[in-house]
Length: 136
Image (cartoon, rainbow, N blue to C red; front, side, top):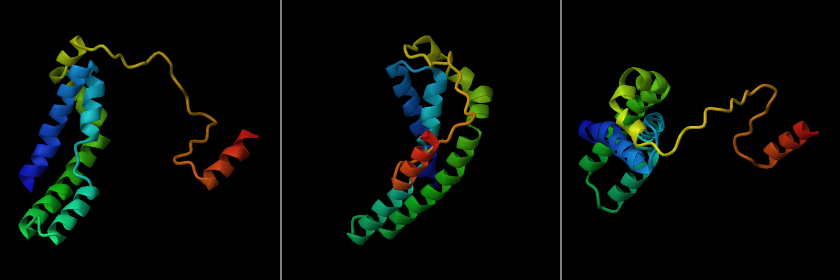
């Protein structure tokens, strides 16, 4: 479980950084994308449970995925909280080679202040009513 979690938390983000280099992203964008997707999700647990039920996975394989999922939940959550600090202190210099190949620049010229705005996450019937209320 720990080895699978290590691969997910360390190796997978590195693959994303490489993909970012090929795509022409700068180091910060590539790091943030890699840092965001470095987790085994609960969907993996559902798939693994189904695989055990069908006899494809053994109980040991299922336990490995459960342990790896729990470890990545903990470490990737900490990484998400401290992403900006991790990038500034450790990864900016390590990934600086990406900035030389960067073809896609992050747009930092326009600052949008969220003052007097209502942000709707998801858009259903209730959100439509909220939007209509604040639109008028």
